[in-house]
Image 1 (cartoon, rainbow, N blue to C red):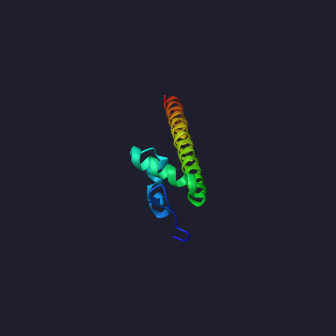
Image 2 (tube, rainbow, N blue to C red; image 1 turned 90 degrees about the horizontal axis):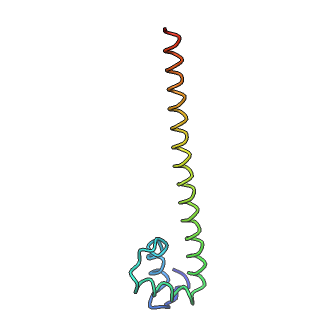
Image 3 (cartoon, one colour; image 1 turned 135 degrees about the vertical axis):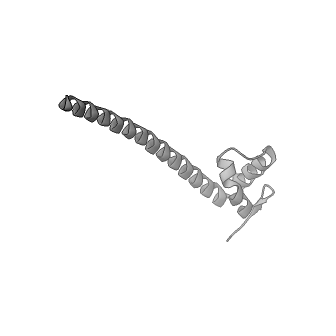
Length: 93
């Protein structure tokens, strides 16, 4: 990594390796403090971390929306299928 800094007890590459766990709030307290200390003084990691966090949030939001829309579409298709079956039954009587 170019311009790698050592701050907060971590190198930039180590912060990068911990970023997903950091964003997901899965770091143990000591590692969390080290990442926060590093990002407080390393503007490159702070900018990248903020961008990564935003990307994760947007991706999660898009996934939730797709899941919600998929469920709605399934309900609509089931309703249409039931109505078609009812209409078909009525024409056969």
